[in-house]
Image 1 (tube, rainbow, N blue to C red):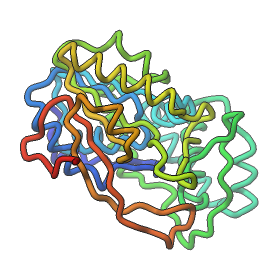
Image 2 (image 1 turned 60 degrees about the horizontal axis):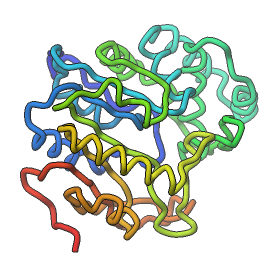
Image 3 (image 1 turned 30 degrees about the horizontal axis):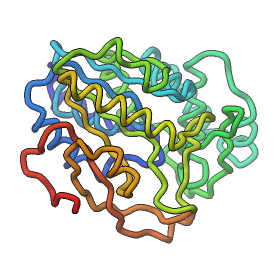
Image 4 (image 1 turned 30 degrees about the vertical axis):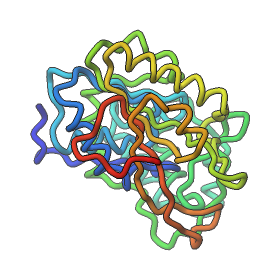
Length: 290
């Protein structure tokens, strides 16, 4: 086990739908799962839960499988893992050259190697509008320049902690329905898909060029149910709607209140209810959904 006081990694990318507010409930779900086998996270995003586990200490007898359909995202993780010192050096260059013109120049050109890709994505993520990651239908990052006064472009200490932590994990770029070969009875799987929309204006699924449709939500629910019947411990987060309650009617449905941006304006925030669907009861369950 990596001693929890040795490494304190936290997400190095800001990802839409981040799970910082859900972490207490997610960690409680890990505790309720008991002595599970390997850990799987097929919608990696910012990796909030994995890094929270790492801060407590990763077990050397457990494998950690981290995946996402977004190849650009996985390249960023691999680049930080494989050569963090080069990533830091490149980010320092980006910091020195930072300007609106430089931002758009870098956004327009995707480098070939994963280390330069990692530094590019981190820089764009730290300096773009609202720290939002979004791709168009061609898989191109298309968020405009942000008016940040003093963005933290290179957090050296955290990047080094992330790099060391990721050496304990297996990274792969693949869709969620191709993870089953690695999963065994008693394993733990956390699904964090792009959320089902709660309104017409909230349908944001552009983390990757493929998007995420209602049909994909249905396929995911079928996979989650199949894994649960095979003895896998499954946790899934999503918006609380009649659609998601129907999809996971065989799961334990736990409500969680969080503050989210409403629409596309940062000043419009509100408390909404999200759901954690679990294949097992939590130790101390939140209010159940009526």
